[in-house]
Image (tube, rainbow, N blue to C red; front, side, top):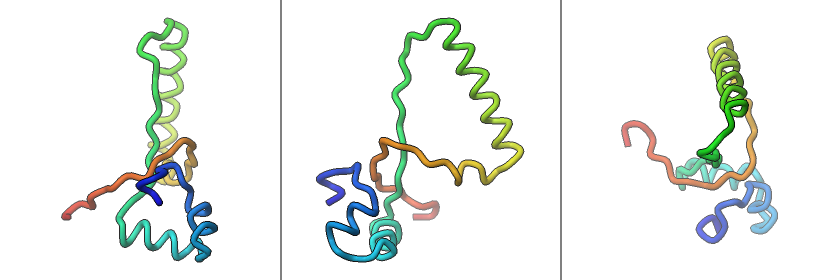
Length: 90
């Protein structure tokens, strides 16, 4: 299913296969070793104002991550795809 549509959510897969969300999560993360990632397109031509705003926002985000290292684990994103990820040592 993931090969056909990499934007499927765990919930969508569980509903389609009529199995629990926990089972789907285990199969995808443990057996298939896949995780969701997000890639965002950033225009290569930004106005000076847009560049300044992005620099300020990026700096604020880095500062927030420095204060709370677990911050990245709490972020939910959209437009994701399932991708194979090698674990360190694999």
